[in-house]
Amino acid sequence: MTISFWHRLLNLIAPQACAVCGARLAAGEQVLCSACNLHLPRTFFSANAYDNPMARRFWGRIPVERAAALFYYEAGSEVSRIIHNLKYYDQPETGFAMGRMAAEEFSADGFFEGIDLIVPVPLARKRLRQRGYNQSLEVAKGVADVTGLRVEPRAVERVAFTDSQTRKSLRQRMENVEGAFRLTGRVDLHGRHVLVVDDIVTSGATVCSCVAPMVEAGGVKVSVMSLGVVK
Image (cartoon, rainbow, N blue to C red; front, side, top):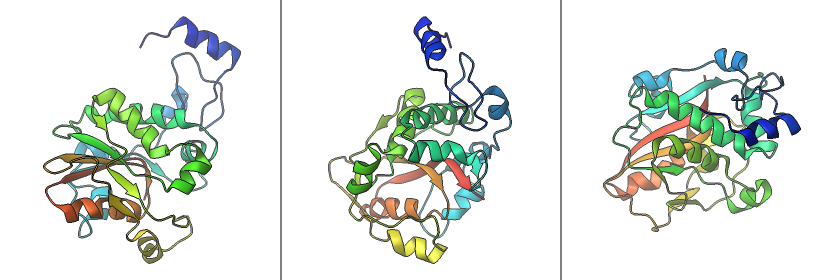
């Protein structure tokens, strides 16, 4: 990728820091420095997207064609700063850049073949107003920039403002998001292969709740992609 004069000038005036170690990013680096990128705890799930620990997390709950996350997420780790910057420190550009990175790596394994469109997991209106953007939509935009797939943020809407999932058990997570999503009717998903994109998958409860109305409507294939996944 050619580094433009304006990008170099911006980096000189307002140098960007690595989301993981905090070191100054060199020209051409985005979000992660080369060293942290090299040591990112990648899952490599896209190489076996039909059967991996993330895909199996959804088995028996929702029908999923493929599933993959870019890296393993551990709360409190240095790598967790990527998600924290995206969600809590007003850095939507982190989602876009990491979405591009994931898409470039997943494309080499044919992960996006046959997928028709992208549906990011929506935020409740209250949370969207608080944050100013939907982090999953920013990730989806990065994926779309690489793949050319259309992003449909209006296909599904969140109808319930739920508590944070962070400190809940698996059962509590499932109950917390049950019935939290519905199809809007603005986008015809029938006969489509939909890629649902989230920033992080923990128990999978949120994704399952988001996919549930698609399954109920019928005629939809679903795959799932995220930046991070909890082991």
